[in-house]
Figure (cartoon, rainbow, N blue to C red):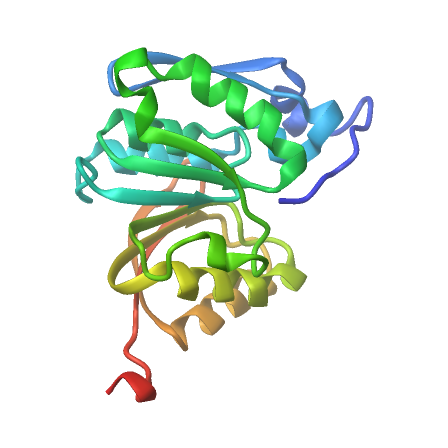
Length: 218
């Protein structure tokens, strides 16, 4: 998660991010997400990668009901909210500055009878990972978290810690720059990776990954 300052009269393509809220319809429910670009920048707006990830989760190609999931770099929490609505027990994480806004969105969009399925928690990639069980998740989710090159190594370290041999990783992203492809190459050194979905309209790809056995595991 990066904090990007708000700039008045920015590019028209960014105008939707300056809205105080964004509305969606997933899991037969209306979801209202509070946005605050001025305060938190990219961490507090809904990006297309999150929308496409939610669409993919709704397709049911990955079992969520009763599964233990964690979302990395959750931002507004849309993906984690949808995962909880689909029956997963989700730990929704981001860095400390984003947690108040994230918690507000989670609490306001989950009905009381399933609110216990979602927990908001601080996680800075590569730091204090012992707070989270090693290999303790069935599913690791990330939407548009591959964009800062200096985060690639701690992100991979975090993913390796969270994943067991049976964990499924889903990453939703737009391949914008050469460094994005470089991250995928790094990922393939430790994970089995395949592209499982492509939204042509938004130019968003979803990659599914599973941990490769390492030499010391053989």
